[in-house]
Amino acid sequence: QKEVEQNSGPLSVPEGAIASLNCTYSDRGSQSFFWYRQYSGKSPELIMSIYSNGDKEDGRFTAQLNKASQYVSLLIRDSQPSDSATYLCAVQGSGGSYIPTFGRGTSLIVHP
Amino acid sequence: ETGVTQSPTHLIKTRGQQVTLRCSSQSGHNTVSWYQQALGQGPQFIFQYYREEENGRGNFPPRFSGLQFPNYSSELNVNALELDDSALYLCASSLGQGSSYNSPLHFGNGTRLTVT
Image 1 (cartoon, each protein chain N blue to C red):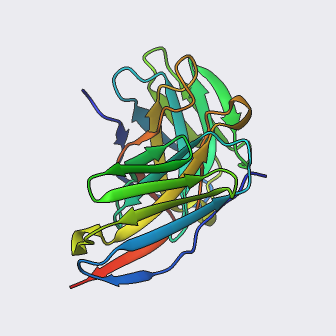
Image 2: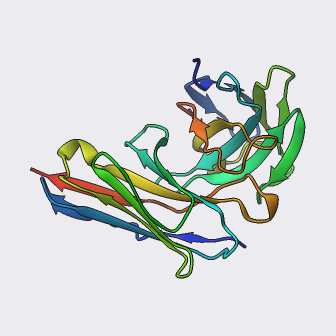
């Protein structure tokens, strides 16, 4: 059973701060890692993908991957109230599988 | 580029009834995946279709079935609806096999199903 674990939160940060969201996974052979943002009542929206160890930056977002520790994280710099949403971690790609497994998501609240 | 579209947006059914949800994949995508998302939970994988064949199935009973058509659109059918089937049903398309396992999912807006 492939598992993806996330703290459900809520994680509350003040506007302008760095929000740090974490995810661990059980399948050591996983190859692809994604972060999705989901606003309340809406569908998930892809915001970051990462495939190799290290950091990947895109605007205010940085994804970090450590395959040895089976850990992936998302940093949001200069957090804005509009970043308030649930962030889903998805892990994919072991054994020829193209089926990502999702965590339950972390609720982020950015307060003014 | 046309995105993933799902219909209907909302649906209310009675326990024991049957429902069909529809999905049109994003242009150029050959793989469709269906997920069920209960309130406060992450999406749970139902099944995936690639070139009209079921390519994987999650831990859902046989009363959940699906189809993929030659144009890569897809249907999710649920028979004998139960109260616990109330959820947001998400369809996602991707390039899937034949391309790369790196292809992320692109979700439609979902169908909110309520079973009373």
